[in-house]
Length: 374
Image (cartoon, rainbow, N blue to C red; front, top):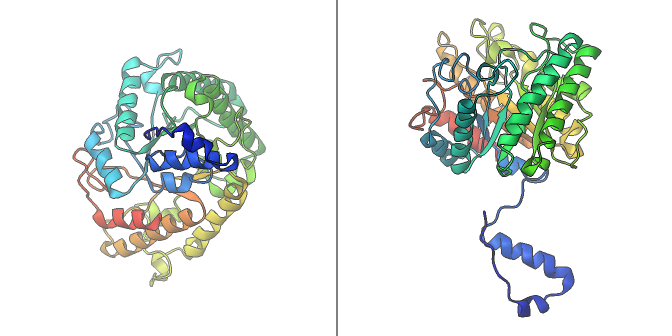
């Protein structure tokens, strides 16, 4: 919060009316205030971002997937390194009763984590993540899912309605039909778009700062091409220009995430045709992000690249340079095309930071990501 500067009336009288608003804004800015988050400054305010992955969304408890409870030291280290936002995936179902009432102890824990992130100077984003997979984009599941989404987001939004704009809400995660990874049918697209609308309506109805809070909706399966084709029409909203779109990027899957694959090289520097998939090279990534720019960013809709990363395969010790090239190029290209890059970090020993002390565990990759998002 900036320090309010008092301007003497004698000075105000001497300022032409056409310049008065500018003078007040300048005085406020010089006093250290931060302009509100807008569609013009979101890229600089939020980039780069990082995920507190495999933590609050872990099942059956928040430490079941190997990470400790988040600490303020961790968030301080993330901000000091140059990250500006943190995406905090959250599971809610296991902490709710049969009537979808979220337990107060879990809500308090999520609140503590958000406050630590904000206190460290980070924008924070919370969502309803995979959460056991109960959100399925089918007519058969639609009514039950909409009812549960409304119940959850009404409670979450009400609880956080006095938090300022440094907290963003994201409705869901990678929503499609379990086990089906192709383009959506008309049914799937209609239902998933409806989930986005349900989220927006539920949050806005709670009032307080939620009346104008930035909300993030998701493309189908957070796939870029599907988002452009099936989600380009954003949900209706009672306030203009306060919605963002979210997509993810892990192409090619056999290089980035499939640890059983023999693909360990990527991009222009690849030398072994058997160890690379040339279809998803630098040009492909650029084309994907260009599609999002043209479909959303150029129309005033900010975009989050909510997840992206390339993991290492221990049996291929020469993979590291290719991993670095992938992370560098994807971060840089996403930022260049107006997408906020939010690195998927799962913690453990392979995370960028020690989740307890905040000590850097991969200084080289931290530098690559931070310097590529400028």
